[in-house]
Image (cartoon, rainbow, N blue to C red; front, top):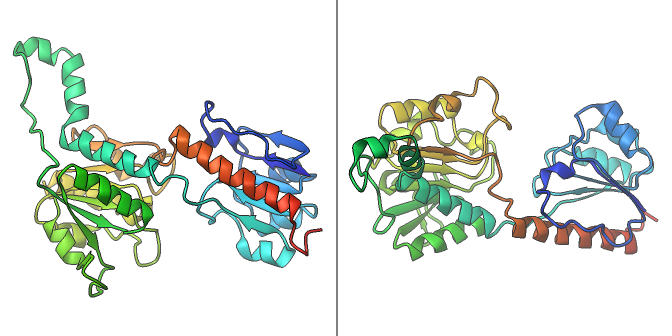
Length: 318
């Protein structure tokens, strides 16, 4: 079968991505613009399309009668018209479980970096400030230990729980938040507002839904009485950026670290850009998932799925 990979540039150049068994004709594009004509042209002869973020709309799918499988290189499926796939008999597969180490370790990196003032002190160590001061060490910005502090985790799935395991190694108390407005389902969970009020660090790992859209906003920030560090490795829309900027300016929170944003890359008017230089703010470009090990694990899962589809096609995909 012929397969086309539309946005291979979403992987590291160093990642090993062997051609899945059974693919006899393979075309790779580093990136593909969101242009219907270009997408259709590139996919016209392919039975399999591999993509991460390219939008596959009904109009595009209607123009690809040879297409049998869309294989996503991610867990999220929002960029594909799922109903159109079903109507047209196009199989749709995603990949899950590949970043269960990468995202939690990235989360702890962010937590440690902000709590220990890594960005601030790196700059002071290299911009002449340290030399001008003359002392053997600088301690003008407080260093905070994780030991003895409370971590509130919103989103107690596989990744959130792994973050909790790592945090306990540092001596943190870990609270898993129940859904907002719900009574705790078990002793493992803590009421949402109690987590907000009790945590020194709040780490977001929940999906973006109607209920979690701007979950962190002016109202919830006002309930964070311990002025926590907030970490977002969930989805950009879980947080209201303008309210984060306001809260940081009013000293309601210690800082903000995020790997995800409402527009990726940043839009020019994203309010979070106004705090990018703050010593307790750390941004990364949606790469928490992407350790080399995680990328290659993802590709291994994907390759097996593609090969299985080729070798054992559904009855409506002879």
